[in-house]
Amino acid sequence: MATPSSSSITSLLLAAFLVAAVGIAPHGAEGGASSAVVGLVTGVVPCSAGSSINVASVPAFPNATVQLRCGGRAVAGATADSSGAFAMNLGALTPATLMPLLNNKCSVVVTTPLAACDASLAGVAGTLMAPVQLLGDTGGGLGGLIGGIVGVVGQILSGVLGNIISIVPSAFSVV
Ligand SMILES: *[C@@H]1O[C@H](CO)[C@@H](O)[C@H](O)[C@H]1NC(C)=O
Image (cartoon, rainbow, N blue to C red; front, side, top):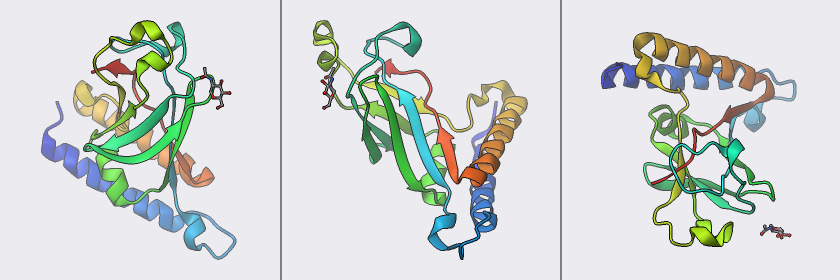
């Protein structure tokens, strides 16, 4: 298991790496604001109540309103399309926006009641949400942690080329 301190150090290293990556991002046109690395959270909202919902096996939630909340605070929002797909632009990533993502403090929260996609779900208490884990499940110990870091660094590197880091939430659950 990763200790809190090693996880914090990892987060700091990654935040430092991202800042460095932004600095070296290739740009012909005088750099400036255009060299920012942008975070994009994408996913599909399911119309279902339950835990760890497999979005492929249930109807989608068209037009659902979603928010990215980090430490309880809404940091971005979007409305899903008619097939439940959403994309939330986090804007230019900074250490301040990256740290809660790295520390697993962010979730995608659906603010539209489930009854909007299925009237039979009107009685469901709770909120549909999905955790965002940039480093994935680090429960696999150091190996899992390193695997997660490699994945994120790979994303950051490929993200630098396109200037976008794609962030995908885990499965939705009603909590
Ligand atoms: C979703 O929104 C679009 C555009 O506002 C609307 O045309 C469509 O009927 C909505 N779909 C549902 C299922 O509410």
